[in-house]
Amino acid sequence: MKHKPVVAALLLFAPLTACGSAQAGDSSTVTVTVGYQSKTINTVTAGTLLRSLGYFEKQLNSLHDGHTYKVDWQDYATGAPITAQMTAGKIDIGSMGDFPLLINAARGKQLGKPTRLVSVTGYNLRGGLNTIVTSPDSKLASLGELKGKKVSTSVGSAADGTLVRALQRAGIDPDKGIEKLNQQPAVGASALSAGSADALSQFVAWPGLLTYQGKAKALYDGAELDLPTFHGVTAREDFAKQRPAVLEAFLKAQAEATDYLNTHPVAAAESVAKATGLPAEVVYLYNGAHGIAGFDPAIKPQLVSALKQDVSVLKAAKLTGDVDVDSFVDDQYVKKALGADYAKRLAAAPAASASEVWPKGASRTQSFKTPAELLAYVSAHQDGIRAAYVPDATTGTLWFADKAVWVADGDDLLPFVAPETARAYISAHGGARVVTYAEALEQAS
Image (cartoon, rainbow, N blue to C red; front, side, top):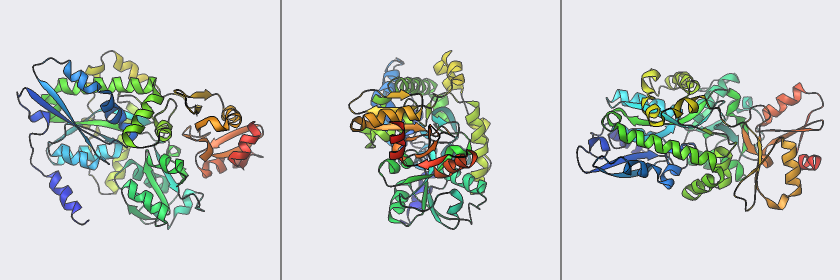
C-alpha cells in the first residue's frame, strides 16, 4: 500500500499526453474524455445517468463540424484521481464534490494546468448531502459524545468538512478531540461494521446506503450546519478554450439529463441503480422528486459563497493554500449553452420537502401533506410498500420513515434524522416524547 502516494505524485506531474480532445488537433476523430464517479450519485446528470441516456453523444453528432466524436467515459471512486488525470491532460471534463473541486482548482493552478468550474450537478442548500452515522447498536446519541472516539472519514472530502465544522460547533477540537481515520468510504464502512471505528462521516450515498442496509444509524444530519454543499463539473481551461462547442454540447446534454431526472425521478433512480449496483430505494432518497439533492446546472450565488467558506477548512488541513474561487468559477459556457433558460434555472428553488411512498410495482411515488398521513397509508398497506420517505421536521432532510427518530407531540407525529435534533425539539415542546416507528404507525392508523 505504501506505493500509492508515489503513484499519485507521478500522476500529478505526468507530462501532457494526447488523450484529451484538446490535443486532437485537426484529426477527423476527436476523443473527449469524461471522468465521473458512478456511485457518487449526485453527479449522475454529468456521469452515470447522462452516459446511459446518450445525450452527450447526440449533441456531439449534431455539431456537424467535420469531426467524428468519440466519448471515453472513465469511472472513479473519488474526485482525487480525476483531478490527477485532468492536470496530466488526460481528462477533459470531470465531476466531483465541492471540497474536491477546490483541490482541483488548487492543483490545476499549482501545476500550470488550470481548471474551471463550469456547472453544478446535485446540491443541498443546508448541507444535507453529508451525514455522520454510527453502528446500529451504538450508545452514542449526540455529537459531543464523539470526543475521544475513532471517526472514519475521507480527508479533503465534503464529508470531512461537515465533520470538522460539526465538531467545532460542539466545542471539540477536530484535530485533537477525536482520533480521525482517513479512509475511503468503503473502507470506513467496513471499519464501522467491524467496530474499529465508532462513527463514519461520509458523503452521498454511503450514509443512506448503510442505514437502508441496517448497518448504521444517523448521529448527525449535515443540514444542521445550514451551509450549502454541492457537486459540480470542472473542465480544463485549455480544453474549454480550444473546444468551446464540445463543452457547450456537454452542458446542453447535462441540462437534458437534469430535466429527465426531474420529470422521470423513479425511472432515473432505477437506471442509476442498474448501472451502479446501489439499491434504487437509496438512489431515490437522494435523487428523487423530493430527495435530499436538488439538480440544476446553474451556478447559484449561494453555492459560490459556500465554496469560498470551504477554503478555510482545506487550508487548516494543509490540503490547499488560498484558492481564488472567483477566477475558478466560469459560468460563460453554461450560460451560452442554456441561453435564455439560464436565468430561469438560476432563480429556481429546489423542490419543497414532502413525505413520499414508493408502492411495490409502481412506476411513480405518492406524496402526502404530512408525515402522519404517510404513516396512515403505510399502516394500511404494509405489505405493499417498497420504500417510505419523510422529511426531518427541523432541517427538511429526507430520510427513510422506518429509520427516522419519531416524536409524538399530541396528535402530531414528527420525524427526525438524528436523535439530537429530536431531543432539541422535545426540550422546547412540553409533553412531546420519542416513540418507536411501530408506535407511530399505530397512532396514525
